[in-house]
Length: 117
Image (cartoon, rainbow, N blue to C red):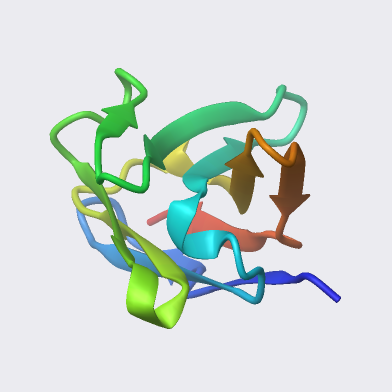
């Protein structure tokens, strides 16, 4: 059974920080592309950040300079450090794992991040 479990969400004030973690069970975790996505109420799910097995990263323009994605392949874990949080960062944050051969796509159950004063 393959699983992805996110943790670290919560309620913070604007300007504060949170660190999300995503732990996975797949044997392909270390060679997969890992990503963080988010979905705010009434909006479509959007990519926040991705990281390849060689640690090449991409970020949504809205989070560049504030968020940092990283991974610890030995522990099958990916992280999202979120600094200078804004109310518009409020969403459910999901972890995603993808690999091409074999083609796989796994999602975690999500963790809520709320930024409010």
